[in-house]
Image 1 (cartoon, rainbow, N blue to C red):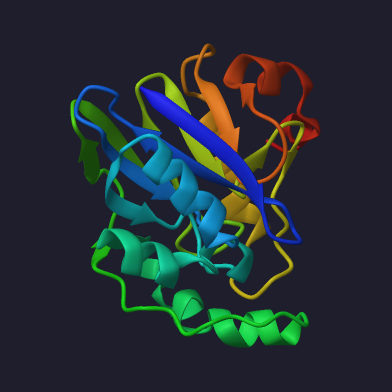
Image 2 (image 1 turned 180 degrees about the horizontal axis):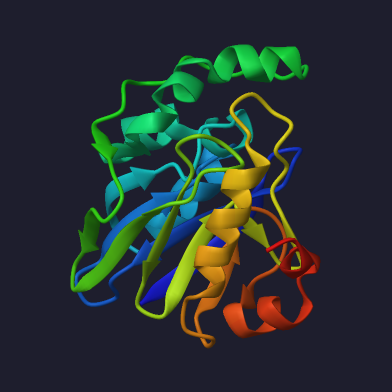
Length: 207
């Protein structure tokens, strides 16, 4: 498995390019900005992007979707309960002083337990609301991509529209039940492991 990460945009959201090294089939997770940098990685590694996955629809995680879709033809994937925020991403960006291009219609509305496959790699959709109503994590191959649900040492905020602290607590608790050696790739900041988060994340006191 190939995992390439880059922090994009003024808010330095992590975009991940994940690929089966044998088949070169790939997915782009949270392409929030700087599409040229993302496309460069795709081309350098001769990847065929099958999915563009949005862990959630806040503008800093979706800003480059149009360009990546135009370049690759990949299918845009969001959770069905994130549709309202996806449709309102431009307004959310404008409210915070950022510009966002119109977003293409999503191609796949996923639910808890759905699977995404790229080559021989399989990832399960975990519905993890709290930061947003349709927030998802992608779990498989001993890694989990957590978006803004879980960070190294912290969690996502709940004061945006659709945030819910009680739901975030349940989602956090669920992630902490994953195998301890699962590597965590978060939407902002460094990577971690479930074991490390159970030992050091301040939010453990909340569950």
